[in-house]
Length: 129
Image 1 (tube, rainbow, N blue to C red):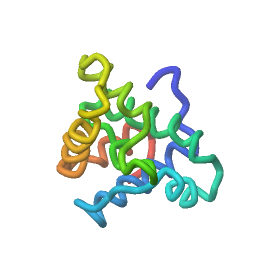
Image 2 (cartoon, rainbow, N blue to C red):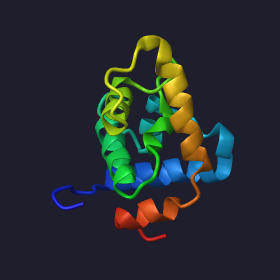
Image 3 (cartoon, rainbow, N blue to C red):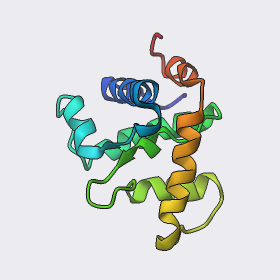
Image 4 (tube, helix red, strand yellow):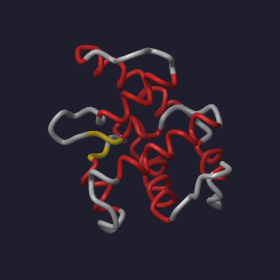
């Protein structure tokens, strides 16, 4: 993780998302605005995407699926543009067409809820488990 700083917001967001998987498992989706609220409104819903994008980058570094798949827009019920851009880069998919976004998101979401070693991410981020 050289060159990347894990902030308190990164830590708290990662803990919240991992906790949602553990407690709600298949119903772990959270809206951007609700995640911001759980973070004490330290960042707005437009800024939180940068933090969860970093977390998903770290997920990829350890071979885990993109944890940001849990976070969705209230209006569309799918993640935002940044999720799909990163997904396309990660899996070398080119541009994700609008009609494929739900399918792409569900595929990654299922990988996230079925992944069993989230402590590995927390440890990688320097969070004691």
